[in-house]
Image 1 (cartoon, rainbow, N blue to C red):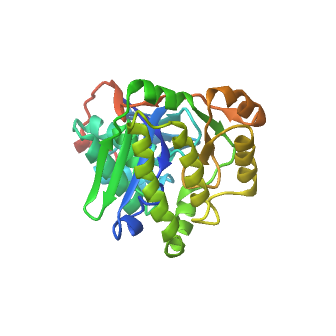
Image 2 (image 1 turned 120 degrees about the vertical axis):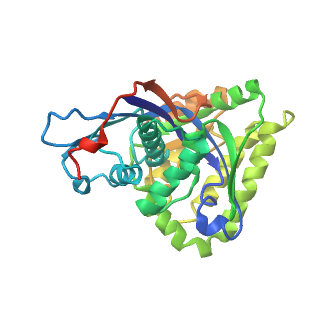
Length: 337
């Protein structure tokens, strides 16, 4: 049995520039961190006592005898990709799916990490990120960028640069006490709305020619935000103000990025004292992130009292195996074709 633990990511700046349609022609960069909410994937070989050969448990259960009968496209394609057979697979997570935190990509990284471990094969964090990108973007044909898979695999507070030659992950150099202050000044609220990121990403790609000006400015903000974090003389509050700038730019990149309800909630947070914030992910719903000075946090909390607040801390481990118990499996006697 293998159990993997893979963190969600929180993207601050540069979202949208990680789409190949943009960065392969120009360049792209994102500033993001992983944090202490996780996807857990349990994988083991299914004992051969049952009529079915594979069992998958997520928001529903699937028991199948032929892999092509599996409804879950990511698991089906991942099993074919790595020639996995006769498995029991269980998914669990600290936060709900389709909420702007890269849940699908986090699951992809954790699933592949578990599969490789079950096969007794080592894959580096970069190899896992690359495999997850291939699984989602090529095999599953899901629209979207590359940052989610990379952030979930590597973990930590990073700047990720994209170009036609690939990507590079560079840790943001920030003093521990300054990083702690940033963490304490961020508040996360669940709006209760869910959406499919791939659908929003498709609309963003379609309108990309009309939003290049916004994307270039959003790209510049990555440099500005990094300078604020790494320069100990800079006022950290400027980071929060830049979040407001990037969110207002993001709203111009697609009609599905925000909704009237989200806009109302965001303005409530700003009026209550937040210096800035943004909706995490491609847009449309999920989690609202605000930068709020400690003396204004109770005011923001009261203004958004109808929403669930989610405390969090930055993490730096990325995907990892938390339980490893190898088992023998004879493929030559497999019940599957």
